[in-house]
Length: 219
Image 1 (spheres, helix red, strand yellow):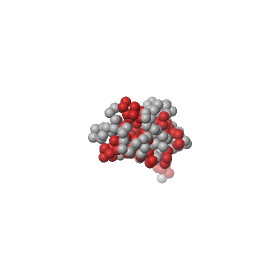
Image 2 (cartoon, rainbow, N blue to C red; image 1 turned 180 degrees about the vertical axis):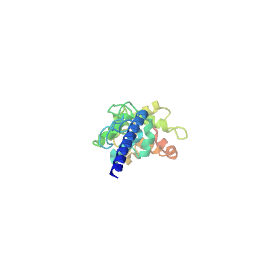
Image 3 (tube, rainbow, N blue to C red; image 1 turned 60 degrees about the vertical axis):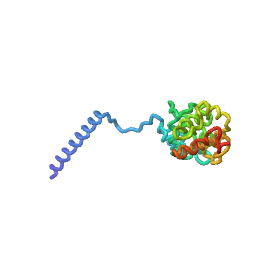
Image 4 (cartoon, rainbow, N blue to C red; image 1 turned 90 degrees about the horizontal axis):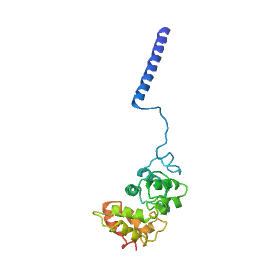
């Protein structure tokens, strides 16, 4: 009996070793290497830590900004609205303080907002806070003209016309998260109605006219 068990043990070990060898060979053919933790192309880190973002995407951007920018610092009325507006942003080349009108710049400040929401949330928001882009009017007009079209009333005849009109709007730092921005002759009021317009086509038909230069609510 002892000899039999010894033989089976040796044979079993040899079979196991052969199996492992074959698996490693297959993995090599398939291009599967040893398991390792690698930093994502967008950088590693926790969304609420202020470190580099894990994903260079609208889904991650909206998740981070909705988590870090709340209450009076909120920039979007909902995550769904954020995800609807985000594709209009130029992606850019890096998640960094590039000071340009891109998703990468906004995502960087959305991360920074975990430590400094009062300033970083505005920069991470749709208008760029006078930092992610040279003026809040450019992002606003791109979003407005891109969405308020077709079966939804056009608020402006052209982007250039929108930018010209926008230069005369007051721009405060409350942004869309402050419900008092539903009225008043400000860019923030028009942004609030534009974001609300993104809720649905029906909301778009109703709220797009409120973003215009001559508005029945933003005056």
